[in-house]
Image 1 (cartoon, rainbow, N blue to C red):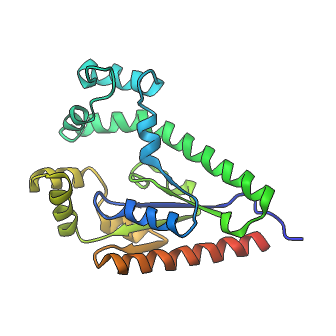
Image 2 (image 1 turned 45 degrees about the horizontal axis):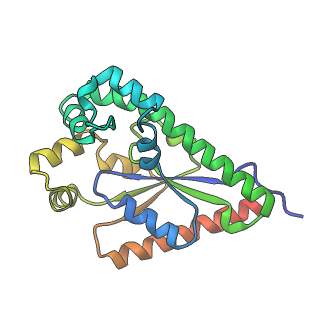
Length: 219
């Protein structure tokens, strides 16, 4: 009888702003892979009444709250993208909540796999935008980077968010260069081509991960 692995294959998906991480994550989900968007955890960490929001208000003041007491994300973004220290302070508040949520999610996958032994559930993909910057790569067994040239990032930010070139470059500068992340990745999905080309890469990587997770399950 096959032994269940100590834990499911933990896969981190990252990249740069506007490199197509979310699109790739949806692709993995469509192929049946368990997925988690860490941005959802980050938003939950600062909901009204939360410990996280209280810490953010303590650091940045009540001006970052909207009329209903919720976080005014636009006001906060203006602060953190103009001040590297402020951005690091925010990350120091939010990231522990995010990684706690990720650990709990993988623990639930471990339990589900232990009870069912289903190979298709023997890996999970968590999309973590600042995976390398936050020092979180060691928490994962494999890291996928969604990558495209910087000029495409800028063009996408202009089209998607209406940012100027200056604002787009400022937001990109708040993250590690995509070429650095590419070199550190176990797997790279190039998102500079057509959606069909990206889809084909997501399918190939998903199949590779499922095969690896299956071998681990059977070992």
